[in-house]
Every structure is written in structure tokens, then in C-alpha cells.
Length: 292
Ligand code: AMP
Image (cartoon, rainbow, N blue to C red):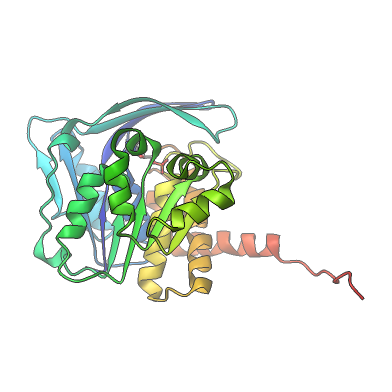
């Protein structure tokens, strides 16, 4: 395996000013794996679903090269469910409901092929489960990236901090960086978080793109594109981390164009390259420096 991802595989109910999706497939590990699969051939997913989860979606994941040996299916149980509502600016959202369901029973046992994966993505879920995944790695991975959210800061802060101390890169949004550090200034928040263990912190500044229909999964898609690109290039230099941020952001912009995973599932490398080129064109400019 080049990359293993742990995180939720879920059903979401999403309300935006443009419509409602009553029961769409989501989950951090779903978005991350689909995004990373653009760059990798051998990736594994560690999670749990109930027997309500559609076999067709598992087929779509397998078609993209995502190995599901680490996905437990619990008979007679319901998958993780999250409901959220976006405000008119699409930049802030309220969680209306989180039903952990099968997540309460997940005690991950990594298939042996997963235990020596050089890249590990700890997607958003219970930090206790994230820790159990790290505990089972036979060698220190080349890179461990972690994502989390306010839900786990509210309910499991101490455990969360233990896991943060073990990762190389943490990706969270601005509100979460403030909550984790207790600092309002993002610069101070970042300085504080960097004393907690990670070498790098990526603060996601939300979704300001065009054509935003549903931002759900943007953060996870970003993380999947980011680590997928790093795993493909195997270059962890600061310059390449910056490239990985652009690649992850380009991928996330596709996720926002439709509800759920609908758009991400059909994205090609050519689509991504075209979007990156648009961005390069936008930010490239000639300027004369003003000092004599
Ligand atoms: P994002 O928009 O990238 O922050 O992530 C949205 C996804 O996170 C949705 O598909 C949800 O199923 C999933 N999610 C929501 N709450 C949680 C939680 N507390 N733990 C793990 N995953 C969650």
C-alpha cells in the first residue's frame, strides 16, 4: 500500500441555500480516498459501515483502486450519519446532528499489507481510533497527516492532543485552529499548535470559489489531494508542500460543484491540470518594484 486512510464513511443530510440532499454518501475517508486515488494506484481504507451502505459505492471506490479490506461491514447496524446546514455565504455551517452509530464499535485491525504503508492519512474521526491505527504501523511512516474537527475538540480534547503530538502535518480550519490553541490571532494560534508536535500546520481558510453548490467534503478532498500528491512525488520539501496545497485546493473546488461525492468521482487528471492552470494564470503578474 502507498497510502492508508482512516476516517468516517457515512451518510450525510445536507442543506444549502441551493437545495437539500436527504441522504447522500459522504464521510471523511470517502472523500480523502477518492481524491488521493487520482494520484495513487494502491491505497487502503480503514473504517466501518452498517449493512445500509450501498454496495454500488463500494464498487465505485474499488474501481478507483481503493482497497476495502480495512472496511468493516457490521450486519444489522447503521452507518455514521451527519446532518449539516450551510449559511448563505456557504462559508460557515451548523452541524444539526451527528449519529456515531457503527463508529462506536470500530476497533480497527489493520490488514497486514496496510501496516507498512509509507503514507498515513488520519482523517476526521474519534482520535482514539486514529491512535489505534498509528499503533499498528510496523515502521515509522514517511509521512503522517491528520485532520480533525471541532466535534472531537469538544468531546475528546486530551486524546486528540496525544494524537496531534504524533503526526507530521495537521490540517484544520481557522475556527478549529483558534479552538485548539485558545488564541484568536491565527499567527499566534499556528505558533502555539506547532509546539504541540506537528512539523507543519495547514490552516484551511474555507470555500471562496465559484460555482459552490455544496462545500461538504472540501476539507477532506483537500487533504486527500494533498497527501496523494506528496505520496506520488515522495518529496516533502517546503516547495513541494506548497504545490500539494495547490493541487488539494484544485481538487476540493470540484467537490464543491455538486452535492456529495458526485463531482469528485468523475474528476480526471486533465480536469485538475486545467484548473491549476487557471489558478496559475490568475496569480501570475508583472510588477515593477517601487524602490529605486
Ligand atoms: P468536511 O466538509 O471536509 O469538513 O467533511 C465533511 C464530512 O465529514 C461529511 O461527509 C461527514 O460525514 C463527515 N463528518 C461530519 N462530522 C464528523 C465527525 N464528527 N467525525 C468524522 N467525520 C465527520
